[in-house]
Amino acid sequence: MSPKFESAKVLDVHAHVVLSETFGALGDFGPEMGGQDGDAPWFRVGDYRLDGVRYQGSAFMDTNLRLSRMDAAGIDAQVLSPNPLTFLHFVAADQATAFCRLHNDALAKLLVSNTGRLAGLAALPMQDIGAAKAELERAVTQLGLLGGYIGTDMPHRLDDPVMDPLYAACTRLNVPLFIHPSPAGIDGPKGDPNLADFDLDVVVGFAAQETLAVARLIYGGVVDRHPDLDICLSHGGGSTGYLFGRLAMAARKRPWSSSELRADGAFEERLSRIWFDNHLNSETSLDLFTGIVGDDRLVFGTNFSGWDAPDDLADHRPPPKLAENARRLLRLTD
Image (tube, rainbow, N blue to C red; front, top):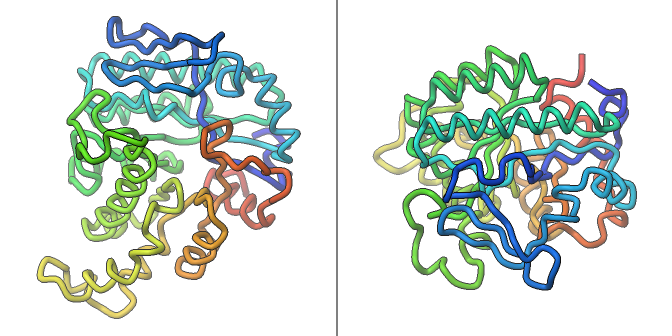
């Protein structure tokens, strides 16, 4: 790994990339974009259309611009991840596998030509866990990507035993698995209709999916079956900080809970095994969350160039410990 990652004081692990090589890879389904030169940019995948976010000529697609804006924000190094709109966990498995290979190849090519300040995470076809395992191994061992990146909404629940071979592969390859939501209904089941307006599918829906992910990873026994697996959830685990007491109480008292989870402190101990990025858009929320989970498995994330990225990143440098944490998570330390 580049010395710039080894010495970085600010290391951003939450930064999406949009790759032109993937446009039109799924035929009529897209992805495609338009209006990028005007005042109404849009991006489409299937019947889902995102308005008002510019990709062309932005840091999402222009690496030189990304690097200059990283300089302005005081970010030394950054880990690039797939665009959540193109997780595509519900399209046909062969299409998803081909798309992920194309995406990961393009990302690896981008990284080879950069200045050593960027690394990447692999898109995985979660419709077919065997194919996801194979692509993870290829991406890590042949392309030099640092781990896998998946959505919360897919054909299998996170605690479904069918997922165990992928988790085991992450452990065997000694890489982390990052989990980030996507808007419901892009290529799979529609979400709650109450989320259809005001960007609530992102503003509220993402937080709900992240909180559900925490619950299923702990209640469903994933952290127990795979004690050496490092999973990192975006946005501080959604509403986990606020709902912590209720989640822990359910583990102690509800009839479905195992004897192991009923023990005092059992939920808390399992929560401490999960990693989170600190992108919560509020210092008060972050203080609450950190007071519960601590900062040993907290990493710095910005959603760089996204609508909710802080405008004053250069004025709010994260504690150096978060960069050290990121190096541990990404296996960049001895």
